[in-house]
Image (tube, rainbow, N blue to C red; front, side, top):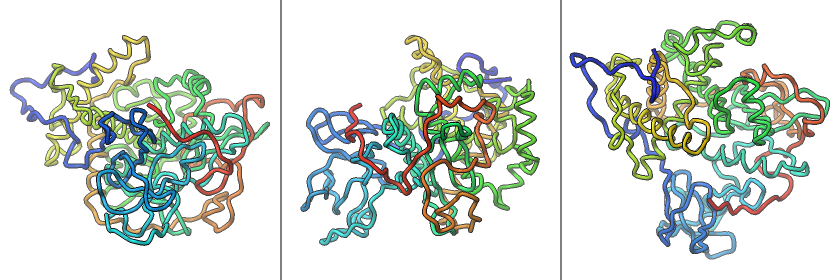
Length: 470
């Protein structure tokens, strides 16, 4: 039996132990991911803004504080202070002036993020927490790549801000020893194979054509997907990274296998079976049909949905919206539906889950009022609830634990930076965990842009202005 705002299992009978009503907050005491901001003039400003359109104040995002703040000029050109009076000097991310239009700030002096004043401005980094994760960015000499890169980076910044807000480890993979993240944003070469979006040992590859609405919609229809976005891609692929980082551990791996299945089954063969004949009963146990292909994909799809749900509820709460105060929806899940019925945060998790259902009931209908696709075009089966709860428990454990020690990794073929070689512009090797795009035919030559990119985090040429009004 499945659960959506329109089609939900019946509420628990009166004799069942109903979970207590919980406030519409994060599923436990997780740091709240703030999404509502105001300029010093009182005007509402938004996550992507670098300029207040009401008073022309400069704006910047401080990732460690999850705040978009207005700025005052510092003692030197290019240095800024925060309008709230916090000590310390800040610089804009080096990608601010490039096509990426990054509006994040980096500390200009050692200890600045902790608020320690320092009379001498000594730059300790040029790229923000999100941009420093880039290994390859699009070649801006190619038409349209500036706009593509801007869209991709906006999605990645939202992803990274959520990961930081949830207390998850977010670090760049460097020196061949740290199990961190890297991103390759690349395109296919003429007459060459299509770049496949996917993940391999912390390296996330994204076909930059996914930033084109027409291409992405074509792929969505071709693959029969109800939802396909840049942010969805990134949330899915980073789920593979966190499986390697968090799940592949003696404390969690057997629990994972009991719930999701044995990931040691042949991945390639599982995908072949899926593409040849998808499971007809997938809707009874999985959040998407692709989740039914292999336990790794079930995890990644569930992880992506968890991030979708957390960010939507956090955004609504940031604006003071708590749908369950206004929308009467029965509480369709109880502790018995959780992965661990004895989890102390279970009631809060259930309250958050039911808040999600109340929100999507309204948001789906509002989307239909505009003639758009449903805001959340999925049906959540009861069997997915313990999986979501498992993800939640793992995130909470990672947040509460001491910093995880880095795990050494083996440099993969084509991972030039990991091997200590300069990164050549161009496409990365096909990642191990490929997306549904693998089922799609390669693009014809006239639809495939030239491969190109700039190594490291910044682009090789300047692009459009960084100011992004809402």
